Image 1 (tube, rainbow, N blue to C red):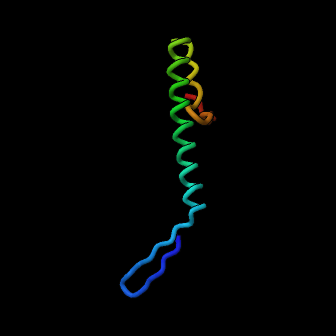
Image 2: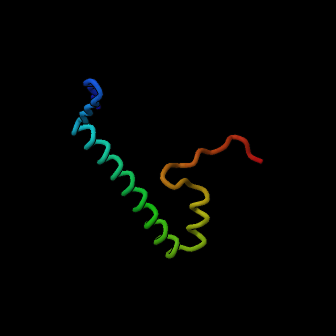
Image 3: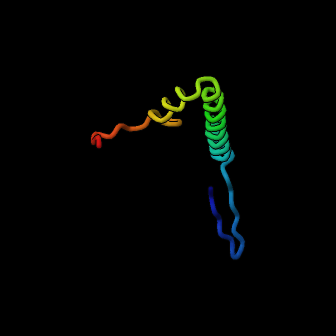
Length: 71
């Protein structure tokens, strides 16, 4: 974004390429989260308690980091 100050008028110029990148990234992230939630619901219906036990051990989109300290 480029800002130009002309007396009391501020003119903003947005780079269309940058706007496209931001828009596409946001849409991709949203789409991934929605698809993952739908998949989790379907697998939960199919596998029940076994799926719930599995999801307790793994992360939603990224793997859970294992703790070195066990209580």
